[in-house]
Image 1 (cartoon, helix red, strand yellow):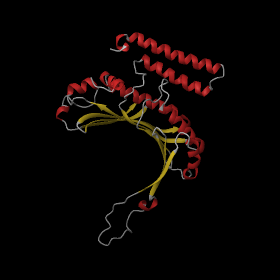
Image 2 (image 1 turned 180 degrees about the vertical axis):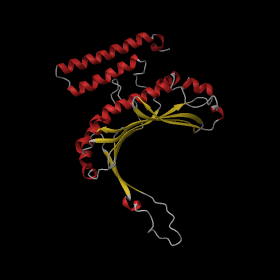
Image 3 (image 1 turned 30 degrees about the horizontal axis):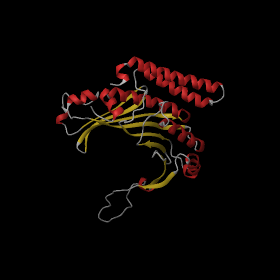
Image 4 (image 1 turned 135 degrees about the vertical axis):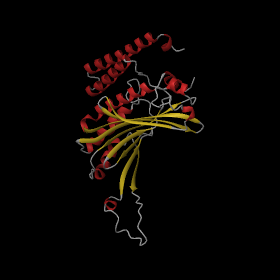
Length: 311
């Protein structure tokens, strides 16, 4: 049994002391001019957020075996034809972190019944207006991928550990901030049409029965009416509001190889956001998704993320 399980009060007190020490260090360094104001602000904000989560009983640790399989951050904006001429300037700004680059041209395929005469003259005009879309792809050594089109920018990672935990050196939040600040320095986007953050988790289910499901998760499935032991697959989806933002939540039971798993899909988004507020909104979306995630999983899943083993 771990120290945390034996003496939870001592463990929480230790966490508070460590975080307060970080806050005091940041304050002292800033006062003495050894830390830039913005760095200090970001650090203090992250540490304060960790303290708040600790007070609510939300985990602040970085799990070595997270269930998240993919995290995607995306912004959408009006179609900007100028991007193609400025993409080289954007590449120069991020090339140190994203050295690999490629350009693709996605063509549209049109399936149409052209009749016995084989003539295309009656096809709708819309098929001739845009025959495809160009996409620029940039990859980091950690395989974080940035995709840019004339109407969207996305950042995706399949090796996600933490969004903004102050105890971690590699944070997805830092990547978002770096990439978007670099993008907005080159390309003017006053208003973001849609900003979204999506987490897809692949969660363990040791046994396909209601008892195990209840032990591991607060599931949305109607398992009492339709026992999961008799179901080949179950799918649940809802679009709702959480913390003043939009959330699309999907839950799916499916077989992967010889084992059934529970897939949790959290897609948070907001519309019509000033570009200067992108990081603030991203933080709020992450907080919403994190709260929903930890309201869905139970302690056996947390233990699995700590050890990589199911007990």
